[in-house]
Length: 389
Image (cartoon, rainbow, N blue to C red):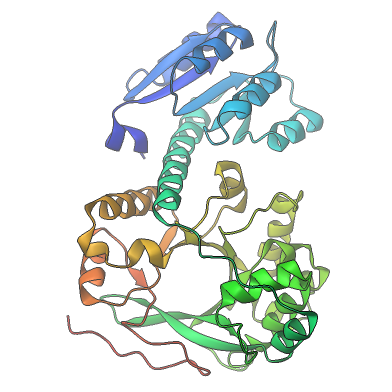
C-alpha cells in the first residue's frame, strides 16, 4: 500500500525526531525508495521549531530525548494540530508511557529496535488515516449542521419514548442487486418530534439519552430476532457506550451480535467515553461490528476515528445529494472511497435518490448504497425496487 498523500497531493512530508544518529540513518534507509520526504530533528525542541514552520503529513518521534521528550513534543503538536498522525517510538516501553501517549492522541506506539516492516506499515496507515481525516474535515465544511430543535417539555419527551418504534431501510450492493442489511431508524408518534436528529437533541437536553438508546435497541430487533438473512444496523450515541445494559451478553441484540453493526455518529463528541477503546473491544468480543455514520456531517478527529477502527463508514446524505452536479464533492467522495479501501474499510453511501447519483458513486468506487432510490423506510423491512441498469 502506497502513501495516500503521495497519490493525491505530492510526496508525503514526515517529521522524524530522534536524538540517536544511527536511528535517523536507519529510518532514512527504510524509506529511501518511498515517495516520502523525511525531515529530521535531533531533539524535541528542534522538532517543535520545524513543525511550527511547515506542514507535515505525519510525525515519528522517540519518547526519550534531551531538552524535550516525545510526550512533551506530542502535547505541543496537539496544541496547534489535533489531527496530524504522531507515531511514538521507544526503547524502554512502559504501561504508563503508552497510556499517556494514547491520552494525548498518539496514533501508534512502536518499540525499539524498530522492525522496518512494522514502521513501514504503521507510517502508511498513518498517512492514509491522516488523509482521511483531512477529507472528513473538508466534507464537514461543505455540510452545514441542521438547525437546533425547539425547546421541549418532560411530558413531550416521555411521549416520544413511549411511542418509539423502528422503521427499516435496506442497504444494498449494486450492481449485484443484493440486500446486505437493513438500518433501524428511530421514529416516534409524538407530535413535533419529526426526525431522529430532533429526537436525540431533545433527549440530550432533558437527560433522556439512556431511555432512547435502551428502547431503540429492543424495538430494532423485533423484526430480526427470529430470522436469518441481512445484517441489522443500529445507531449508537456516545451516551449509549456508557450504558452497562449495552454489554449484557443475554440481551436480545447480543444473541444476534454477528448480524449487528453499531453505527457511531460523527455528530457527537466521544470525549466523555475515556475508555472508548476498551468498550468497543467488549462489543467486538460479543460479535458486534462497528461503523462510523454521518461522515461529512461532523468531525470526530483522527485519534477518535483511529480508536473506533470501523469496519464501515457511511457517507452523509448531504455529500451524496446531487453529487453528479458538484465536481468538488465528487473529488472529495472519490478520495474518501480510495483511502478507505486502502485501509480495508467499507463505504456505504446514504441518501441516494437519483440514478445520476448512483452512477457517479459507482464510478468513484462505491459499491454499497442506501436511499429512496431503492426503498423508503417502512415499519417492516421493505422490498427493494431495483433501478434499471
